[in-house]
Length: 292
Ligand SMILES: O=P(O)(O)O[C@@H]1C[C@H](O)[C@@H](CO)O1
Ligand code: HPA
Image 1 (cartoon, protein in one colour):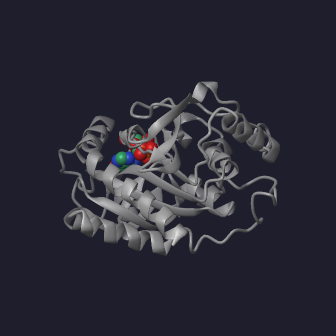
Image 2: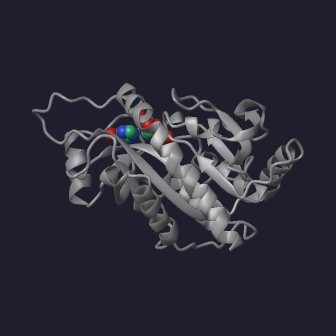
């Protein structure tokens, strides 16, 4: 049923990739960051960078989407060791679902304890505006209802249990921390919270699909993050995720609006600096809290 489930994704394969990376950098990251569409500037904030192109990393997939540079950047954020994915992988790129989330297992084997994920998403919540930042409190794995789960296939207990709990997927303390930091930075007006829904893409939603998701209580819809969260939680890392609302989802047949990737990248550019400040402050606080 899962013909390729083991190919290239065994514990030993992940370990070989992690060891290959660790042999080439002195950075021992405890925080891992994933940059969403157009949000790769986060990685540029790291000091003393050691950069690996995805194409040079054994077992790593390649980025094929505009706005995803395809580099793994090690370095320090205000002195704290981090690793940052400047570009992620999506179902619509044609990757096997296990491969999309493979970097989370490599993060774990690098020593990462906390993962901070960002994405670009369309706003369904009618109170959201373009440019709002939604702290994700829960998700809907829409492809998951049809059996598309990155943990499908043989389970290796060295990563985690066969049936992991997901009701606590998004760390409450980190959500509160982001809210607090957002208030301190004066971002209160555009900081929201809500439920993210994964769709496979790459086509954007029809009006009927958008209306259905809205009725289901979805606040923002996108094409990533959920598989990474499931795999990160499976192997015991703490998870925080946020969506930048890059566009308002079209819910009206008379609307002249049309979702497009250029608008997504444009909005990301406008909010990038504030997002970088929010995430970098979180990194320092996570590390400081650990030492106190
Ligand atoms: O990687 P993310 O989820 O930020 O990318 C979003 C979803 C699609 O890949 C793309 C659509 O514009 O942006
Ligand atoms: O409207 C959207 N739908 C799905 N994915 C997205 N990523 C950015 N915007 C969107």
